[in-house]
Length: 109
Image (tube, rainbow, N blue to C red; front, side, top):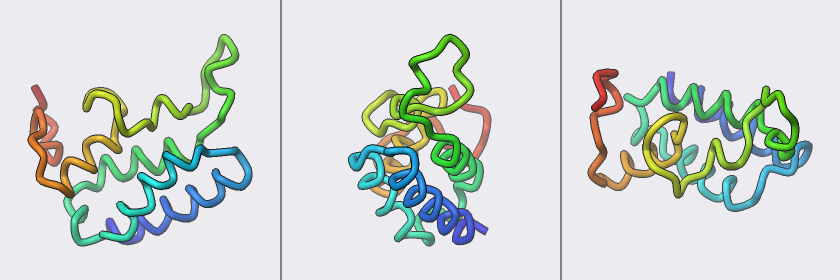
């Protein structure tokens, strides 16, 4: 199942780059994840969240008073591993970095 989600993430990322001006630094962080489905086979929920964030990306989502889309800040890889910072978690999962919890199990912190 993760392989299909990763393929959807790849397509959504390419579409967001062309149509919604997804920053290259985010795409450059997402594509290597898509190339390693075996490394992320147990991370279905974070992958689904990443898919949702990329699919609903809007460069100007922070500009209005009613935020309904995701911004680069929401997806950003260099933030703390809490909330919706999925790329940080997935990068840590593939490089065996210490995580605050096992994200495959929802009893975090």
